[in-house]
Image: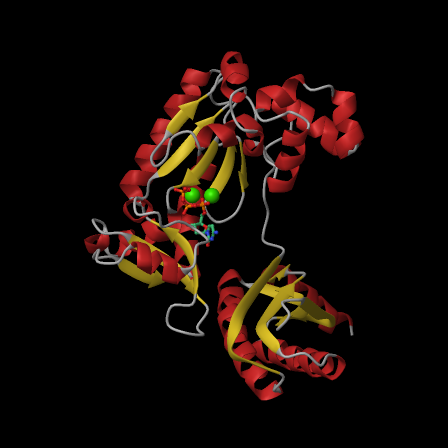
Length: 361
Ligand code: DCP
Ligand code: CA
Ligand code: CA
């Protein structure tokens, strides 16, 4: 089963302010340069009715909603993560194996508890829907299929609050008419290439000679495309662990090479990032920076610490060191700055390690 929370960021905003529910709600990533610069993160379904969707510029969204009483809000990622964490806990409790993908999506292996029966799996989905709706008041869509690939595509069939089941017998008819780009891994370029070879639908791809596919796309991709088009996919639902890194990024008010301005922004990011570290009780061994330059190239630098740390001063000190070195090596202005910490150690463990370290010395 693949579950995907409906219009997630916007639904979270409706959750904490139900009064906005009847209006178009647009959540935007404001770049901070001018009042309306930035892009739409997501929008509720009322706003989508006016052609507002993820990725379009905010000024365009404003234009499409001209004269309509609507609500524009900035992204509040931390809040959405709290909501997501609570829901994911519920999802996890209903699965034999659980794999979260991104903030609003997860795969649930329910094979065992449904006894391999698709009607039983559908009942499980209904129970989860009721529980999430009663306790958190958030809706989601679910797709159920014989494997992850089918579940994911099935989930997109009906939204919001959808529930679509594709049994093994239905797989072929379900996939055949879909355009090739509905398969994970088929982007615009690949789709164009396939179209050039006479494949427009997944059915066309399924019938296409696998050796020819391999000749065009290479062995791994060729076989993957062939299998996917035939509904064959045996990737297991993989239990997900802790995040591997935590990062923050922001746009500077102006393009600059001024260390003071850059450090001013990065220390704000560091403070915010450090709050998350403290909350998750994580120690880190790795600090990094990224700089996105005026020509939009991305540069990064990082440093591994001698011993794990959990303090804000360390982050700021290393970030300063890295930016000083970076600016000495590059002569372009910086447009966006980001910081990252990684190689985590859980606090309980690192304290024990540190204690051991002191005792043995
Ligand atoms: N998101 C974003 N920018 C994008 C796409 C998505 O910031 N270009 C964020 C906002 C979304 C969240 O990720 O709420 C989840 O993305 P989805 O693609 O699942 O889209 P939604 O949940 O918003 O809508 P849907 O109901 O179609 O799932
Ligand atoms: Ca979603
Ligand atoms: Ca999603």
